[in-house]
Length: 268
Image 1 (spheres, rainbow, N blue to C red):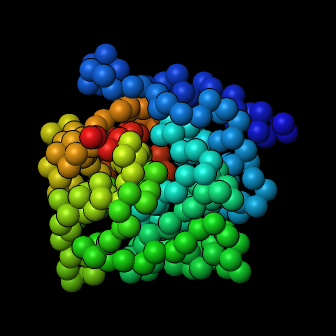
Image 2: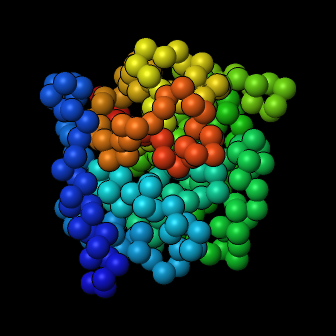
C-alpha cells in the first residue's frame, strides 16, 4: 500500500466513526454506518488512482469522497446511477471503485451540461472511463430499467428537485415521479446516497432555487414517502461555521458549505 493510500485509509477509519448526533437525530433502527464492504482500503485506492485528473484531486480535501462512499456502502461490482453527475467528479471515482465487473451510469440534462462546460467532454474523451455510460435525460423524462441498479448517488443536487425556472430550461420537476422511478430502477435493498447543502431547519423547499440549499428534513420526508428507509446519516461534511442565509455559490463560501450525508435503502 503506497503512502497516499495509507493516509486516505487513516482518514476513512477516523471519519467512519462520525455521525450526526445519532441519539437525537437518527430514527430508531437507522444505522450510523453503512453495512457492506469491510476492506476500507478499496475506497482509498479508488481516490488515489493515478488516472484521476489533478483538478479532481484538488477538491478531495473538502469532499472526503473515500469516507463518503464507504459510509454509503458502494462496493466493487455494483451498478450505480450518478444522478446529475455534472462534470463527473464522482463518476470517475465510482468507475475506479466498482471496477471492471461494475457499471456507472452518468446522468445529465441539458442545463447541467451547460453549467459544467467542457469538463464533461474531457472526462470521457477517448473512452477513458470504460465502465461508464453517459445518460442524457431531462428531469421529467428519466426512465430506468426495472431492478437494474444497486445504488443511486445524488451529490449536491436533490435541492434542484425543488427549483423551477422554465425560462432558463429548468421546468418544475415532478418529484413524486422521479423518486418513483428511482424505486422502480433499484433492486430490492438498493441504496440511495444523498449529499446536499444544508438549509436551516424548517426552511421551505423553495430554498433549492434561491440559496441552492435544502433542509435535510425535506429530503428525509420525500424519500420515506416514496418508499425508502433512512439507514444512516453522517456529519462527515458538517461545517458549523456555515451561514445558511448565503447562496452556496458565494465566492467565499463555495466548497465550504455545511453538507449533510444521508443513506437510504429501498424498503420492502
